[in-house]
Image (cartoon, rainbow, N blue to C red; front, top):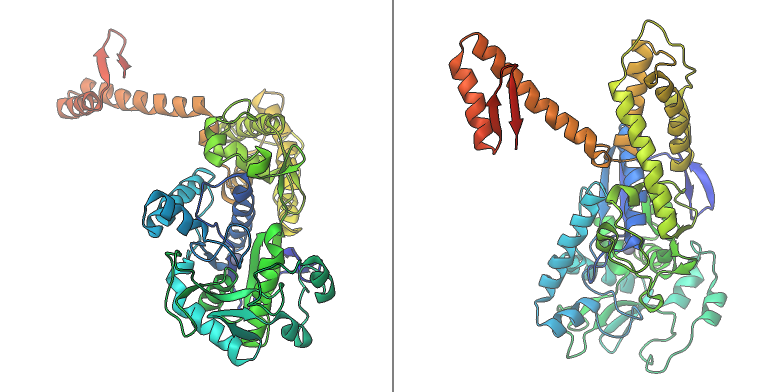
Length: 486
Ligand code: ZN
């Protein structure tokens, strides 16, 4: 039975969905004001692994991953100008053009990484009415106040009735000492109060009417609103990067408790962060590498281009709750590991069965399942697959045999775990296998044509030659059969 680590209770728990056979899952998606980087790849791949495993277990999953296109600001969630609005103003674009441009690029990168799309991908800007209604509920319950056209969460009042900070393990006293009281925040009672609705400054181009002002929702509001809209007041799983735990997810819990009287989420899951040569990723460190740069090898920290599957394999080689330190050498090692796994996979699919099995086999299916059920332990799954590749190579080298029953099971387990659950596209990593298959297919067609000619079936023979010629192949009849080239 699947066990996952619940960040809220700080322990592994057996996963029991609210509704039998169904799972509701919400994952904080990207803010679409720039290209996706390695930091975006990790949550996307982590929750893709979970999504794929839940599907493998037979659950019907409603997977909501949002697009943040309003309300997430450059330095502080409450002050300053919206990143998308700023970009739109500087480049004289419609804000929705900026949003669409980076959303398309994000989708392109996710597809390259073989990350399955969510079942619902709502935009914050498409849910302004619902967010206003959510803010109204919090105001009605008395946990928010209006100040100069903006609405703020009254964190001190909330903390009298609910444990604010329970997810991140902080208490209000700690938060108070950590938070600087900044100048110009006079409209808030306390600096740790966060905006639920923000009055737009005159130069702000993304704003909507509300009962309080022409403005826009605070960043945290969209996830509380869209999570409960699509998954219900209570749902199973909420995921995201560890960097979102505070303040974003803590604020989400506060908003939901304030409006609904209870938290919406049963299991909070967080993936750990990626560092680059031991440092946090960030523009100021000159170590900010986009996925596109990885795929093309265009960054001073990269020795060469790395394929999307190498990036995916690199991320899966670590457990999602451990930190991963990126370096070009680490990626080169992942590339070699993936090549070995791919070679074993391709050999396995071509093995010929014998009467009996003489190589030593483990119960691979059970071992891989146990690893996945232990909080999605992908590195252990990978190590079991590598162990199993020894038997494959022994049979491939003619030093052992495998029965047809054992071979069919082994092929099925590899396909399930490598392709369906780890989501590794095998064909991309082996260009020669692709070439072999392609050559084999053309040879097959021309052999059919040869047989047709011998049977004086000129119609079939001409059809095959003419259509191959139309596709750009040159087909020549020879003494022994045929020759072709592209
Ligand atoms: Zn969120």
